[in-house]
Image (tube, rainbow over the protein chains, first blue to last red):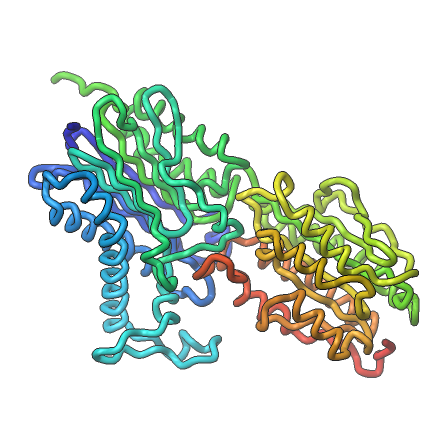
Length: 296
Length: 232
């Protein structure tokens, strides 16, 4: 068993160089929660709003996705209880969690729509009228598509890690020995900017989920979550994996404050020199990856 | 750091019918004229590395360049018209090319611009099937510039619809050299910029044509040229 209080999250999200040029906002979002008293888990979620003509509220949709993911993951883990067998965790993570998350995200979208209904101007470019919230009726997919976003989320408890992904984006694990891996395979059908997302039909069946036991000696020292704008800055996976090792080195040598201070600048530089897209990175570092605390 | 590769392929008809009324000269001129604009459009977006090549099809299909050519180095070799219309073979060749190592996960959707004045004389369906059997063939933005009256026939339109594979997109139709030049320039610039931008490209579902919303706006622009100039 590894104490979850030994993990720490840090993150940054930057507006893409192309978005700056075109006056578009950053459509990514990131939320994290470090373990603490009465909250024995690390939670980290990043979301990437589609940003297409149809997804004109995806900046909001990604923020809702990251917020809802944190809340629902915490509920999910608490509901399972501290002693749930790993087989049960795996089973529930694959079946229940995607359904809970999508239902919660859709509820959050409906709540936002109740406050900010679509206008005729929002749908001026499309053949249909703006969808309207009606009691007892679900919204058409075009309403959710307006908020469309992908999601990558992580929870680390004292006993296990749940990796969860819907749509494009990347998760890398970095081990003490420098080994970098993908806990979830990169889906090649997400090439050329096509992706499944929270608003897709049957989205709950498209989740990629992995549950690993957390054991000292085999756990990664660092887990990196990123939106696809980051991996797309690198020519191939070999170059992309190297950045995982670089983050671990920086954390060890300079500490989390240094990385937190520099992260946004690094990502902005990457967007300028690479994909031009929004970039969001969330890091979950085990304290073996951090420099020892100085004694007072 | 690396810019994302974007492959742009012209599929140009060099069959005998293109000799009639100066169509092949107009096509050569239009693409020569568009190349500087294409380079300028590519420079506008440093996040995409644009590569250009062309397949000329007549009795058979051939690549214009035998190597990957950055847009800054691409030179159009004037086509001479003559022979049949091996359009199916051209599609199959492009399908063959749209695979690793040319294409990788980071690539932007390729652009395939078919410029033709009529119907294929070979097995178009087999060529299209081969192209569409490749994930990058499906992901490509496929456009048509249809030249002259023959290309407006129901049979030709059916072929073009199958190639485009998206009801939201219509073929461009050029009835004179001016319209052809404008359409070629439009594809070389506005369409290229739209596809090469990471903004507004995400789709709601894998396997769908993700650029449909913006490409629809781009390809419904009417470039008919002056009516009195209709020569084809």
